[in-house]
Image (cartoon, rainbow over all chains, first blue to last red; front, top):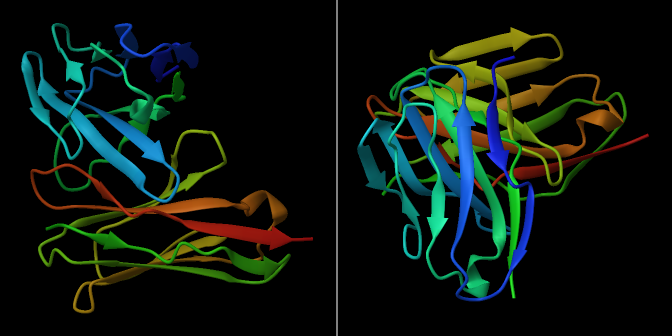
Length: 114
Length: 110
């Protein structure tokens, strides 16, 4: 089954404790991205990657890191989480980047930082 | 600045009615337009895409695009309570990332 898989689905952590949210897709997509979703603010892009070893900042990159060492994986790293990073996070992938290309979303990760 | 605007709602319609969801975008060279449905706490799922001016129908859903007015809409006929969700409009142009609106909440009452 074609899918984007995120782990964990739910995470409660403390301020300053490094964490990684994993994302993997089995569709051989070139393009992957991370979004956070907050009430009233909609989906905001954190980082995206157009291919292996190619990443770039989205609209809200502060406090986050990403890496793309393999085509299928695109982990999101919070080196020192803070309470304002409490949010619902989505990973998404697309076959490529450009007109006509839809995004396929993972199931989401609900992160709470206390 | 690329922007996609949607009325946050909620838009309330009775079961069986037509729900009309609207979206405007600021980037004139936008080429692709998508409607996603998102149930509370779940991930967005694509329900319609449209690339050319006019209407595109898929079952109970019709997407309408007017590039001159920079306007895209989604009509849901014979609305069902299961259609109650937030509907996200998304736009992209050429070699660029998708830009999402904040979404419109639709409530269909039995």
